[in-house]
Image (cartoon, rainbow, N blue to C red; front, top):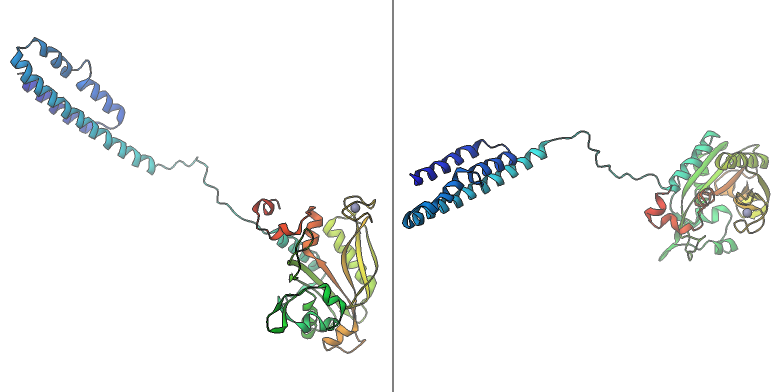
Amino acid sequence: MLEEKIRNIKNQIVKSIERVKNSKELSDLKARSIGRKSDFNKIMKDLKNLSIEDRRNIGKLANVAKSEIVKIFEKAAREIKTKSFDHEAEKIDVTVPGNKIKRGHLHLITQTQNEVEDIFALMGFEIAEGLEIETDFYNFDSLNIPKDHPSRDMMDTFRIKNKEDILLRTHVSATQVRYMEKNNPPFRVIMPGRVFRNEATDVSHEHTFYQMDGMMAGEDVSASNYYSIIDEFLKRFFGKDIKTRMRPSFFPFTEPSFEIDFQCLICKGKGCSVCSGTGWIEIIPGGMINQHVFVSAGYPRNKYQGFAFDIGITRLAMMKHKIDDIRLFQSGDLRFIKQF
Ligand SMILES: [Zn+2]
């Protein structure tokens, strides 16, 4: 009789377990089936009232049945766990914030170059591209810098071994005559690009940096046109309040040459360490294009006049954003790059 009862309980559990939907229902069923108040537990308790022989036989049977039942529950628990896991994976909660994809942005140099290009484009300048690998002629000779000229020494040059005529351009001015060979005045053009110097690096020197040359030429372009264009550019770039001045200077490719300065933004002209106590910062060298340069490009001497200037894009970015080490720009350090 008891043997049959035990078998029935086990069969009942096997049937009931198939209908169980979740772990809560499973643990309830387990409590009802083999828990303290279960019929099965009552049988175990009643064993003590049996004869020794029955107690041994039925007890053995009951223990085997119980361990089988425990295994059935363990198996069911594993299945429920797997099913509920799959169920969770299929669920889409549209309110959970998505994983934000990390995006980069334009480098400060590119941003500055774009800004400068936009200002000049509004003043009617077109943009021309040059070559980073140049010849001695375009980088030096065409700009009135012959072989023995002292300013060659100021621009330490990367050269190709066994090809002394080939070099990495030391300034974007190398594009000036290339442009003039294909175009005739009147023109207004800017020539942005990367330049290279073979020199030791420190807070204000880098082997690679960015410049932008500009030229405006025609039959009646004057030095006052030069000053007004640059003054307008600096006001648009740094803000209306900026004060500028033009003073004489010397460069081989311009005659006469001028340096345009702006009043120091830090001390407002009183003098500080940034402006070396002068109150002014040299920013744009240039002047009236030397007739030798026009002749290099194949123009007749004294037919045209115009001005050329050079803007240090990297330097402008340093001034505007108060960056005191030029080497940061190409360090690849994201902590620096992400600030702009
Ligand atoms: Zn200052």
